Length: 202
Image (tube, rainbow, N blue to C red; front, side, top):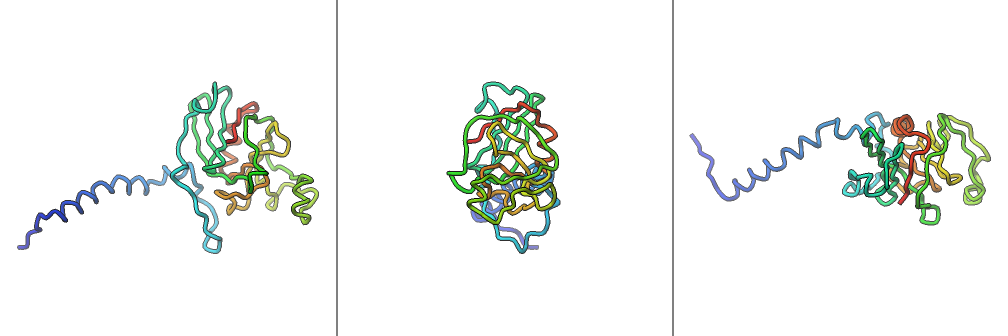
């Protein structure tokens, strides 16, 4: 009968495996990822890979950004490309997002949700059509609409939090100023968010 020799190398290997086991179990627990990443997205084998900074995609506290929670708070973190939501009942949600393409298109500061629409239509701004003359003057709701299935309008004209049918945009600098979410995520956030919800873009 053979015996395993107790060596320093075997002890270190065994300790490392034991330490990694909880992390592996957490990573393989679907419910921990379902809230942040949708499970029914189309196959992406033909899409360009996206690099994301997972270390900055972490839970935040509303008290660090708002004086009071009011009817709810939304933090759009442009650096980490994430949207955080809190409501007075203690609900917290964290979603990956798309962000503006350039600093010139980025608006930061405090605003609030003033209107919500299911099946939004899209009217590109004059500046958008100058940058891209191929854009239509108006686009009805539907699969080709860049605002996705739901949109929430802010006090700033032409700045929205909305969905997108093009899932490649999430996690990228890809918008003309708006904050974009996966359609399943904007649908969930839309249902929870009340008119008057505070919004901070930073």
